[in-house]
Length: 337
Image (tube, rainbow, N blue to C red):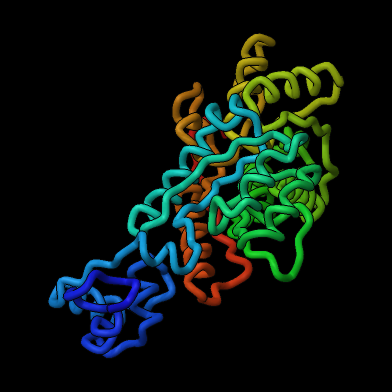
């Protein structure tokens, strides 16, 4: 008898022999890892069904000291987490992958970690690994988490190391595509509302905006930070209007900020797209709930969540996934530009 099964039941070695694969391959299939070929997955699945193999999770966890839990660490406050559709899409993607494994997801929301609670919890051995999303350059407590358990970042890490694993979208390309589209529509004075530039995603989108303007021989216009929130977008839009700088278009680095900006423009009597064209970023449900509906850059947030979970599951199963995965973006045109 092994720790994997009760006496008399099929063993993991018997499943491996019947499927013609290694024991570790069976383990990866059982744990829901993505690092298994379709042929091996099919063979192991059939062998498990034929032998009626039932893994003994409790015994295996006791033997390996695995908790079968993964932490999702979000260095934001609850208002931001529950108010931004991006997080819902990412969590949905993560859950869809973990649902096929034996791992459970622990959600840890921490805008900062002044009393070391979040990092102490992770370092205590309560989880086997962590997924970190929406991190800032100031979130130094993430480093102590990464020193204790395998970590996969949602987005390029704020303090990147060659050993880091992350799944990102091509934010710079998104900024370029959005700005080039506005230029193609005849816009020449293009302002922008950014997210917090302490976040790599916001900085990359701003870089893409600037690159597109430079390529077209145009100068960047006024810039304001909207904090990736609707309220911040409204305030940033008011700041741009108060600057007195003329503009005929806006690249706004999230749909939520664009919603806030639209409200401010509406109160000022400025029509979209007649007076000002707008391109947002995300293609979240917000994009189709505002008037006019937003032309926006679609980022595959659900897929990003799935890829992060796949990467961490592969690491925990002893695999060697790519350190950097960058997903493509797509421009979706609607009425705002």
